[in-house]
Image (cartoon, rainbow, N blue to C red; front, side, top):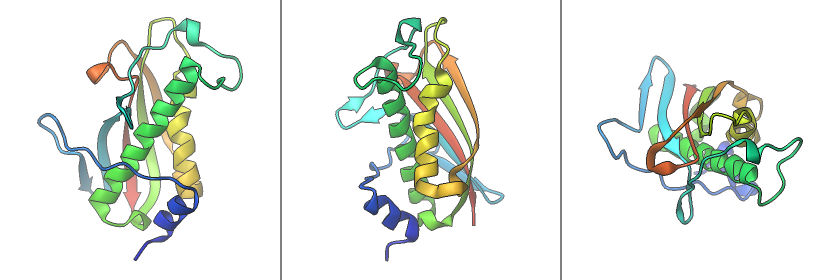
Length: 163
């Protein structure tokens, strides 16, 4: 039987990726004290890792134009968000068990002069609200780093409260 959240995903045409297995000595998620901690998910697209580093040359005032590097970063963050939700489904078996998105911590592969990390991570934040409604509103950090695994553009980890 499909739950409310999965039905909502289907109505919106949102397809979750298959959860990826860890590639090092960690687990994809840990449930403790009513919280589900999901390990960092890197930006993976249909054709593999979404790679790149953003710089001041990629700054945009207002919405990111389609095809811009900033738009690619936002899309990469959304892909991370989809992977986080897929891991949450694998952990719980039912996305209706997600009572709240508590926190996202997002890392953006950035040159020292890039300062729009929050706009990039909005790709995942907006997805959480789209999927979970008000329960998707969360605390957040958006951090610039000089490198990420496999040269990806974005990595995001999450904490979910369980019902």
